[in-house]
Image 1 (cartoon, helix red, strand yellow):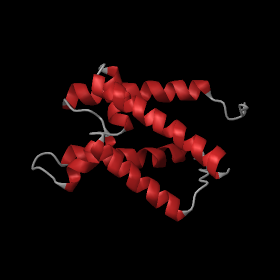
Image 2: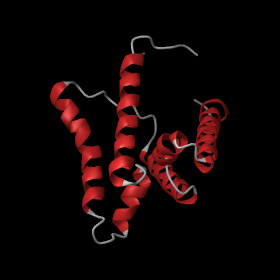
Image 3: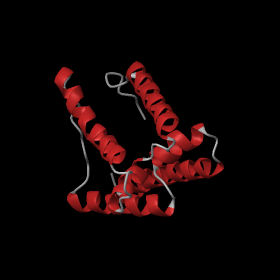
Image 4: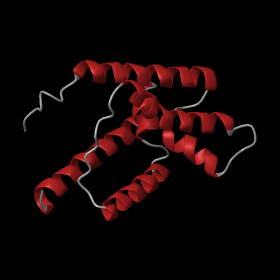
Length: 144
């Protein structure tokens, strides 16, 4: 394994992590809720009166942030090495996994671990292990 030193941006990554942590902290302090994307979006599928506006604002912010970034800098070009079938299967598996896991990587990994939640520690370890195994199988056993 080699590191692409031109793409190695530790300061940008650190700044991004600090911003995500600060946003999650402010969200729980002011809203009393965990900033888990699947939970926020899932709450819009079965809306409760008085619980819609903040969820819509959260999702609009997620979608609007890259657009605001694009006003000041060039957006990175994504490289996706999968076809539509693979992307659809991955999306469905992630959706099913977040339902069974009672949350997603943002809820468990960012917010749960920072609260020392045992359930989130186990869930995040399971996410990471599944990712490691998937990459190993896809790259070394199936072909890649």
